[in-house]
Image (cartoon, rainbow, N blue to C red; front, top):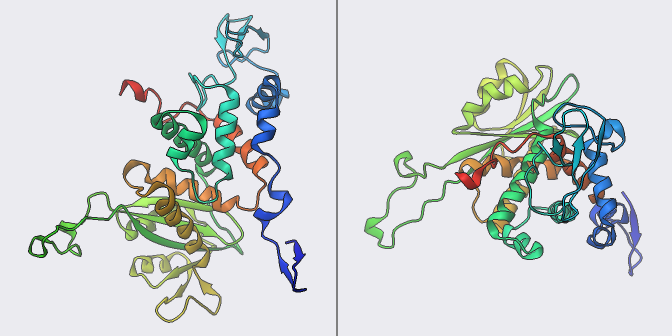
Amino acid sequence: MRCRRIANGYIMAQHFLLSSAAKTLSLLDVMKASDAQVERLFAALRWPETDGQADCVHCGSLSVYDCRRPNGAPRFRCKDCGKDFSITSGTLFASHKLSLRTYLLAILLFCNEVKGKSMLAMSRELGLSYKSAFVLCHKLREAMAQEMKGRTMGGEGVEAEIDGAVFGHYVKQENRKEDRKDRRLAANQSPRKRFVVVVRERQGNTTPMIFKTEADATKWIAARVDRKTVLHADEAPSWNALHARFDVRRINHEQAYSWDGACTNQAESFFSRLRRAEQGHHHCISGPYLLRYAQEASWREDNRRVANGAQVRRVVGNALAAKQSVDFTGYWQR
């Protein structure tokens, strides 16, 4: 961590996001780049094994040649099977109408945000409709989530923290007092109420999942976390069943936030980021999109000390390595 001297003579640590190491790519850099440079960046991330040389997405042949569209958009044609394809064919960005530069700008804007990106702000900055910005950003969240597929956590000598938080449970009360219901009763709670449960390694990865109750998460934790891992959890009775399989250190938050090495502060840090994203940008995250928002927050938390240029390359690489979106393929046909 870098230090800097301030006016009164004291030396204080400089936050990573304020350092030059965190800012390796800017909007000005993207706007100054030529179309050929942007295409080479996407091609290099789409076909890293061939150093950016295109291979046919249909048959795998390297015998392809440039066959651009009349508007100049990049397109290739295979000499063996005769089919056309582009850099984004078969990926999260398949059948797109936006230019590659616009996608690069969108990914940079998305990665530069610390707690999330407002869809309204994205639509204004890129001149898109709100629906287009909404779908685009969810595809970027899907690209981030590619790194969490099948991820196993922990191991010998590894400590991990687990915790859960409720989302989508708000129920607006009636105006008149006599018409109000007791929201503590399950019958009067929102059907969209879900628990986000997170497993976070200390100095490691973060993986979230969605459940109806915290207790439902114990089987998932047992399947995803190595048995030799030391777990840290709070006093919630939902985690009692984990003692049969793991070495679990408990902390009672009514008495202390951290005691004798046991704490869940890093898991709480993840929920702090997710809560601020909800309150400051999205205002409500629930239903089928809740997991995507949780995965975005975990990706941002794990990469908070990675330069923005490297973040952009990772998101682009994940999007180009993934298949077509599982959430938004053919959504306009309903």
